Length: 354
Image (cartoon, rainbow, N blue to C red; front, side):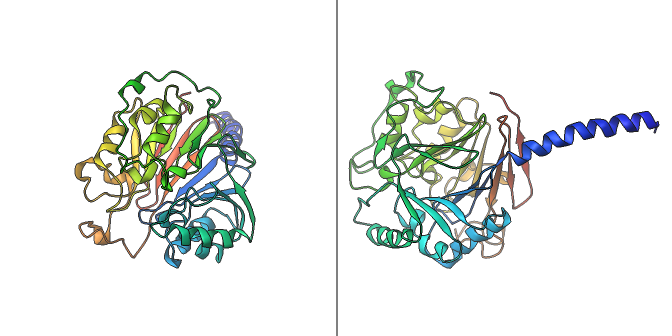
């Protein structure tokens, strides 16, 4: 090849590579850890600070998975642990995790409000563990001081923000179609799901929403009569894909391009939620931590699913005791992002559009 051509190629690479490297250094890395139907999501900011949302079930099995992913991400401590609420699939693993990796700041919604499902015991264990660090009781409108990220609390302790986030606030005409759930499905009080700490995280133009297990009526307060959240790029599907959450008028108003469902083989993944996502304007892809046994053909294509089950089958719903796979998201300030499945290496790039 002619020397001048080689020179020009070298110059082009010299100009392009630093720009790409700079984008990567400023990226937000998100790891969706498989805790078998619970939630544990690790965010690593461009500054290297870490935010973990929930710890999954109790037991070393799940704590070791979280720590393994943290090591993979270069994380040696959890700077901020957000416990969305005190159900065992979200807060049960606090004690085991804290025994394996330092946790500096503990963020929660305040006192437990539920007497069933072991939540008083989970709350007591959480309080004792949080004494090892600094505890923060989150309120709607608060921000977590994580360098390089904008982390907004939009709901906590059954209260939601009353003013729109920047760029949000448009009237939501679909609110006229709202149908409340029954009192049994969406109780007015005494339910920890409704207390969930819900957050919206931004890095540059990229936005991701994680609402824990927030319930239908509280989602309504974020969506109606005005959309207080605005548009997002990526949606952590609420409540493992249950259909007593994932209010269509909120999901559709946020217009996510892609989403992750942290369901289990036999937990969450309601057919109605799949339909809500697929009908959302501009929605491209759903990624799943597990293939939902009862969801059948509503599941995403297999290349988008991290864990298929024992021996490649999922009929029993028994988790695979071998390799445990995760989903990784890399988000950049220009609004572009990449999602990768650790099981098969499949990834998809989403270019910036906003």
